[in-house]
Amino acid sequence: MTRSARRTRRTLQVAGAGAAALLALSACSSSDDSSSSKSDSSASASPKMSGTVTVFAAASLQESFTTLGKEFEKANPGTKVTFNFGGSDTLAASITGGAPADVFAAASPKTMAIVTDKKDAVGTPATFVRNQLEIATLPGNPDKVTSLKDLTKSSLKVVLCDKTVPCGAAAQKALTASKLKLTPVSYEADVKSALTKVELKEADAAVVYKTDVNAAGSKVQGVEFPESANAINDYPIVLLKNAPNAVAAKAFIALVQSAEGQKVLSAAGFLKP
Image (tube, rainbow, N blue to C red; front, side):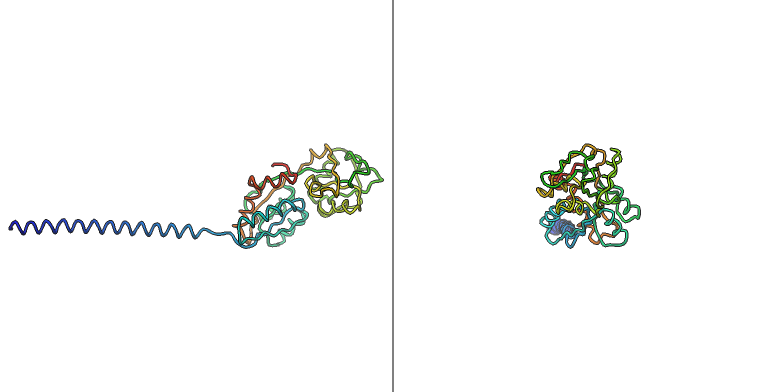
């Protein structure tokens, strides 16, 4: 082989190696682009919260949960939080009866058990706050109520929550511990109804939660009593089994349990879990 032919052959070999390297680099680049594109696609595919979140919650949570609902909607455009407030036992019965809801926040573990026993909840309910009883009297406390025992006076018209409602069960527990018997003029379906009787001056006093006395402002006057320390209620919250909007429901529960949520609840008078 001539010197010229050998030089030509070497040039072709170098060129061939370079071309192979370029092809490999191109293939690698193509693979990286594909991977990057796939990653971007995956990121954009993450679920965005939207739609309505339906929350069934104890009546005593009305003010604080309404505030949290507005904060949730503001932080998550396209979502709406709707509430059904009432006696925890009634709400629990509605849920087990098939009422569509995403979240249940009860005023006692006993009423939450109505739902969990029927396997209508997902996971274990988490206690997010606690609440303590207080006596609500007319403004200025004209009847000079200073203790739970004072409510047993026959001259006073006293209202209690129904015994099946957490605030009623707690009141009965406090009365039993104090060995007191009290015959109310009425038993109310939830704590707000009991408080309203005093606000409308249809009753002289009611045993409700501290949070409800706080929410009522100048419409009533609160009287603390030591026996309430023996009847503090834990408030559990849980995602419901057939939640129509589970993604947003989980996010709302997370807000309730967050530092921001706890701040709102503490300001309303709730105790930390």
